[in-house]
Image (cartoon, rainbow, N blue to C red; front, side, top):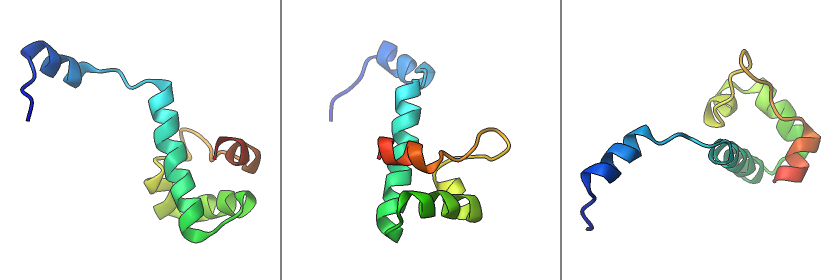
Length: 77
């Protein structure tokens, strides 16, 4: 196991999460749901709206932002 320096340790705690990291983290989770439940894009969109557990898994709060629509899902997944 490699030992990290104090500067690296401090940087890891203060690292800004980029939009790309947030996008990939969310879209990969959506892709996993789509594959697990064998849903087409439109059905996946409806399932995310209907299931609180799915929204929690992909970290979407409907008060803050909406579920990606089926066209967004088909291009990003």
